[in-house]
Length: 340
Image (cartoon, rainbow, N blue to C red; front, side, top):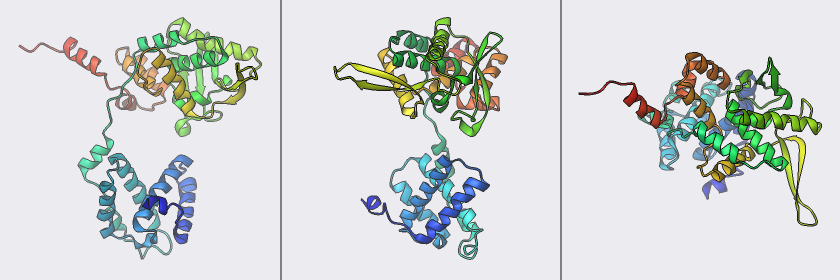
């Protein structure tokens, strides 16, 4: 109730400070809008705790009390860690601003900290579930392929199996991003016309899955070209569902990209549950390929690293390459010695 009551409250001076901080993050630090918004939300969390006092009132005695207030609300440790990090960055910037150098002691900001164990807890991750390629291929082959929407959805999951993109990339890929050279297909992932994390350009080559899985994508592209789709049009266009006056469902395909990542996730959820599997988010396909790659040649693993867009093989291993519990157990049995 208190949070709802304070929903529209603000401190005018604090708002001016946050406006300048937004400009600092955007221009000087070159942070994207999503990161800037997250920072301002966490700063407002602190304002709610102080009942909208001026930021210059911060001192070391407030640090422990503020952190304890977060802990008392039973928030996740990762959220608390993020909140403290964003707040510290803000106060460190604020301490250098005119009018605040005499109000905030830089050393007092260091008191905004949680214990080492709490920091480790905040970084702890759950076991990453992922499909096997056998499950992925089975689910794709069971998908219907009669209507435009069914053909599109089958092509979406097929391309994800072949290229293991991030959901935002899968949603925003254009016709021109799929390229064929020397009888080989690849995707040109570029922030010029796609929603790409960190705006990093990369080439994603097709993983050699069965011909029918690859054909789902290529046939879909040919179908769109026959409908008049051009290079700048989306590879996976939005589909409108409307009922006619005779209560028949009519689907209309527009030359507009799918707007929501949630729409993509619904396609995966529906298809895998229909195949009898639990739903695991589309991003898990990146774990699938990384785990598979560890049993292949070093060159294959390095190619997968480049497909995933990682600058270091360590990132591939630490983020996606943990062995599944099945492979971990198998390695201990098959690759280790026997205990006498």
